[in-house]
Length: 273
Image (cartoon, rainbow, N blue to C red):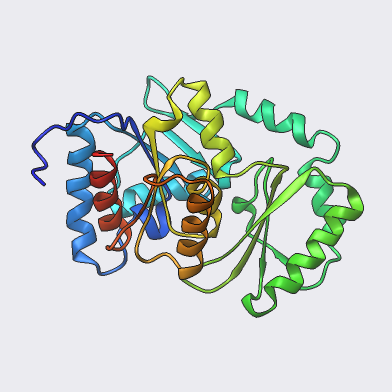
């Protein structure tokens, strides 16, 4: 495809995960080159870029610098529990309207109280302070014992009638089991849907790209979706199954290339659908 040829497309937004998706894989020169081409493609076709990541905001800032990523106007971080918006002075600021929405879900049991209630559960350990949030409680668990730890946490949530749900994943880089407790029903998909209504962007104008378990909700929420090649077979199968069950015949693209290159490949294809 000629990247200088502007498309006539109804794609207005590329919402993308970072690690394993937009961020070039270590030592992958093709990813590095395709990041430049991707930025050019988005600019040429007036497609807005939104980050949708499990990282906390300070970590996103570091990733932008370290990987020479573009700086978007919107960042959905903390696995969908924080939305940041760029102000006129270029500073990023928490969107308080969204936090107000989440506080209505968790008012009966705030995160600090939930943490105290779950502290005696064996097999889990709290993640670092910077990885917690006012609406996010995150734990590590040994991958080999992840299901046992998840069952124990779910038992605690049931006992407390806690207004929280969990997102379970495995860190693809170090193999840690990850347990994120979020306000009930909240996920990357929930946050992206809320954001799309807030800024008045049509659902079908958004393409979402991801690779891991905490991307599944957004990959299967009805958006046009890109699964990069380095995603696990399980994520690919679940995304494909959900789209087939919903009879979304042309909304999923399984990229043949990894990470950044797969995002570029996918957005080029989706821009023609």
